Length: 142
Image 1 (cartoon, helix red, strand yellow):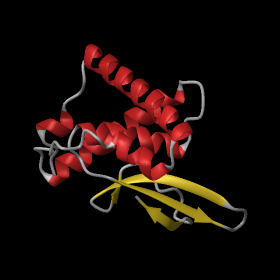
Image 2 (tube, helix red, strand yellow):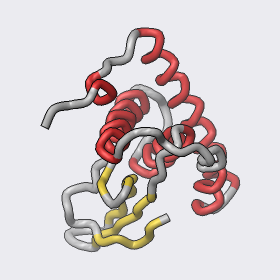
Image 3 (cartoon, one colour):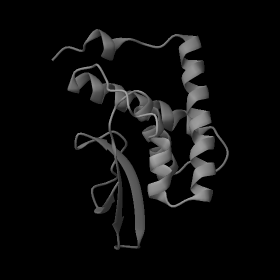
């Protein structure tokens, strides 16, 4: 399988800077919203601009979503504050909604060897952010 031009295209310096700024702004919005409202309301707010529809093939859409997921993880890794899985997932949800890519936020838990929760994003049933090590049972899909 060969990669399409959309999947191969690398961002220039200015485009990378703009994307990093977009991620930082989405991060600030997600953190602010989490302090004000329950998670379903936060998701509604972050998805508010989702009236667009992606004009890519399903494979291209998934590739773009995963590429943005990696960018979100890289940018948030250097920002101060809580940048764990839930916040990463909310930021990515916002970016993908703005691009017309539908997603589902999945929250999973496990109880052994100790209780742990994890959040990730899926598009059309495929993980965009890491679903963890496979030991998490789905608790909620939003």
